[in-house]
Length: 48
Image (cartoon, rainbow, N blue to C red; front, side):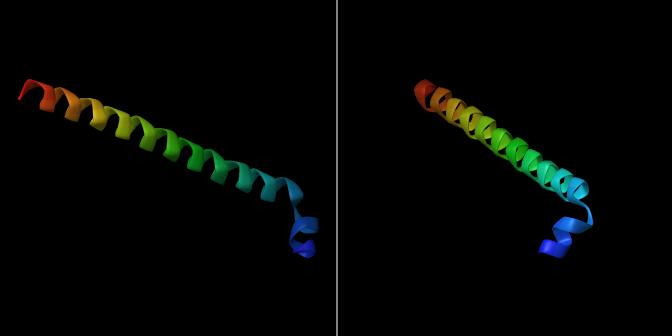
């Protein structure tokens, strides 16, 4: 682990930041999707 960190700290930090960014975007997208599905189901069940 120490050898990995000493080799190129900048690129490993960048990789971690990119992975965390994609995870964050994925969770935001998932949240928006669930909220929209919930609203669609609410409107469908209100009409019937």
